[in-house]
Length: 338
Image (cartoon, rainbow, N blue to C red; front, side):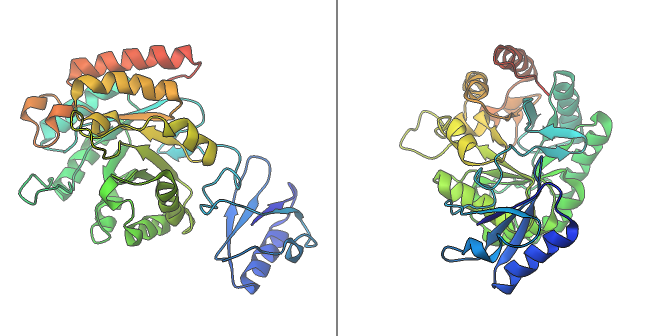
């Protein structure tokens, strides 16, 4: 259920509604809106009688919510969420571009890449310091040294950092450096990690699981929101199908559908979605045309020497061309590039 407060409701009236929710053994979740505050109720196994709330002072209405992902649903918050990150915005109409190497490999590599993607219009720098890999023998990242190099690149360029956190043990370390905590596809249903980043309160980018339905993806986002953190960005990065020509199958059809279901912003990652550098630009253009809030791509100064995911990384020249193309597509749709 969603309790809609009147636009002039006082803090005392809001607290009284929250108190009544707790008296029923349920959990109140305050959701700020453009015009008024709403209070979502979680913890109930069945319908909640609106009469518990409709006569309380300051309450405008009590509305049932049919979606199981209550807090991230547009039923609860009709207006789109805009996530504010170190002076940058993700969501709200402008297209954000997140770019950088799959893995941080050296100071020279990450600084050169950061400067190049900033010069050509990226809003955020991505880069992995902790790298969960399919094989235990593959490069696992530079870890804290990698985080320090990302922080140095942020200092040099002003670009906020998006980097992956792989477990609760390393979360405090990663959170000291990161502006956005990325939850990888393999961790989408790591509920302990979802709860921990939710409690931390930093912006979170939640990648769709390798074989996850949209409902499972949104329920994973609900885990973060249920701990009071609504700064969640969804990332479509392709799902595993029978096709072997591409690394994954980039499911762009879900972009307009997900936008109708949730108020959270959605980013598309065509690098992991295809695994082929030549396909990244066309699929990035298609993602913008489908209505995403941002695109995340991998860029490397020398992809042939990359320690991870070289085949899908854009060269510097390719990234410059992709940015030119995205401006054209976004401009045709009346969407500025952030």
